[in-house]
Image 1 (tube, rainbow, N blue to C red):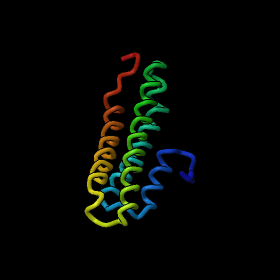
Image 2 (cartoon, rainbow, N blue to C red):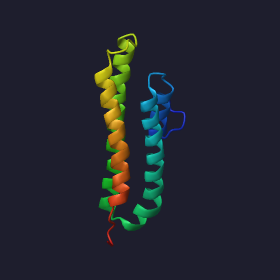
Image 3 (cartoon, rainbow, N blue to C red):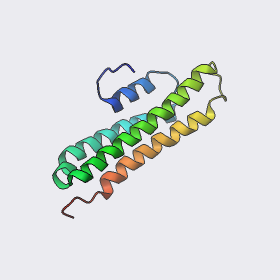
Length: 122
């Protein structure tokens, strides 16, 4: 993957947005992912690092990485089928639904992780 920024979640989002393969609903979800990833990173650097144990920090990092991994695999499955079928509508719905679900789930997971976090002192 070409890396315009060197920040995986941003580069993955740029790749998805620049593909012209996404409908407006998926574009919105990618935008929400970018926003929530930024919120998560700000929170991680300012709140979590000051309140979490090293083990909790590792789990929090893993949470972000797992979401990005799932998005990447869903994106690759979608774009591979999308390109292989000549972009013919109706032939990539299953992969499109899976991408939609994983993007929505990632946004929800990152948000709830921040909301529900209890540091070592709580």
